[in-house]
Image (cartoon, rainbow, N blue to C red; front, side, top):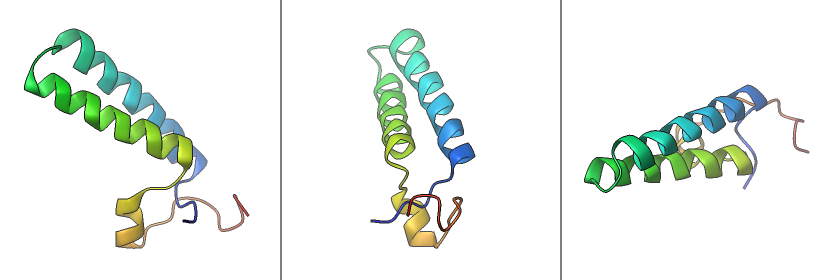
Amino acid sequence: MNANVGAIDRLIRLLLAAVLFYLGFFLYGGTGLGIGLVVMGSIMLITSLVGFCGLYQLLGIRTNKTNEYS
């Protein structure tokens, strides 16, 4: 599993995860939409921390430099 998410992409994912968690817990808490937002936020958080995105792998996308995590 090679990293395929660059630094700027990781930062954007981290910020997006924070927004999704806020929306899921506070604005839509206890609803199906809230649960969905928290799940999406969790996925964004994990891909941000790990630096790997499975969808990017399937589509052949790399937003990081090739030697960034060597």
